[in-house]
Length: 99
View 1: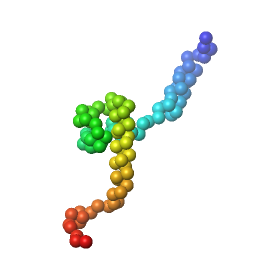
View 2: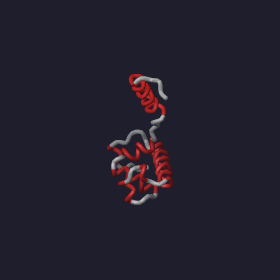
View 3: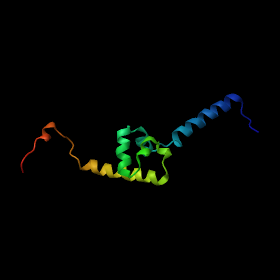
View 4: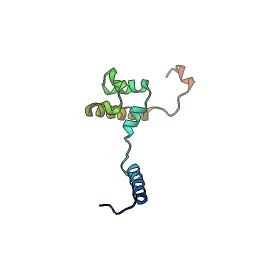
């Protein structure tokens, strides 16, 4: 039997909700990237992960565990590739220079 009045119960529920939001609502960065990506980026990511075209329309939660693992590996690979790119690309890079 609970000995708290309604005001105390409401206060307790607010505290519990705040605790849930701050401690148990950890966001999955891969899920946020995949779900928030535009279709043309998702298409690239799914292609690089070896997934089918139908996966572009799915959310991250709709993928199987193995498909999610493929997406994570594809993101890691693309991140490694991005580190090799120069920091600045100019329109002058269109002209060919002889070595």
